[in-house]
Length: 472
Image (cartoon, rainbow, N blue to C red):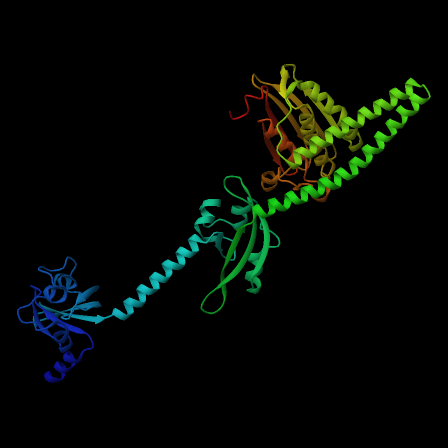
């Protein structure tokens, strides 16, 4: 019987050795001797690793100490210098009294398995690097639209919001978008695409082209969806410029036609008045010519603000005088809409250096925006718009407030974007864009406060002296 067990010991498909408390090898199977040499008067750490002293973490020592089986993963070197990765198991050998007299160590060659594990780890590292460095925003989402993973570019643009809802992180809104390409991919397992405008954590508006792809488990079920968003803002900005040019051409065509008719009428009155010696007719015609020339000048100024950057034509202006001019333009419109337009101009408003025509255009656009916000609001019985002007030592502040439809956070963030309107098809999307552009050209700023269904408040801050611009 002893011979049979000895044969089992010798035939084990791994390295088997028996060690005493000093880690001296007292027995070993054939495979061990073949790969590591004779064991007489040699120690485990000498044979396996060419060390002069025992290993710091030794499973044999731990088995001698507590009498339990232990395991570890090691790299050993054979006689011919081959490095072999092994998984080590130790078990105690006891005498008749139960004392541990030696420890059997069985080491199984896992070099091939370890190599595959290394390849797998390297492959994961490569794919993780690829995932991190792809030049687009990538997020992995579950069925509840919670972000469970995201790449570096996403985190840099939107923050590390793992666990947050996609629509909260991307658009700062409280409910999911419709239609939602991620939900569509969960529903049918197909790739879907859409174009979205999202907001980075620094407030930048980013136009993105979105693609979604399913991530399946071993059974083929869609467990996650990858959303890849490419920044196409430069393309959309170019498209916007081209659309702007188209709108300008259309607007100018209609405007010029009316102005030419007005000029023709004025010139006719002037010419016939001269021929018939009727000074009153000459005066009337000349006033028509002057009025249409002024309108042409205003149109050209607006075109310049659309088409290119232009330095304001600074001149001394009385802030309340500008306010009165704007009120005279919009009072009739407010009455037609049934909106109560009130104003309060402080005595300390004083003067400022600004472009008269641009300031007038900026304030008209803001007030018209408030009137339109009231016009499209059908949730209140009455509406009001207030216009205030006040001054500080270095600035003039123009304040326009209303109780119209108001804006949520997503709308506020897009308020000054060209062609974006919170009033849908009832708005042009031009007014606030122009107002913001004119304000910035004067070195000023616009503060916006708004809540959905409650109304909006704009405070425009313009430096009195154009050499002392806001932020300088």
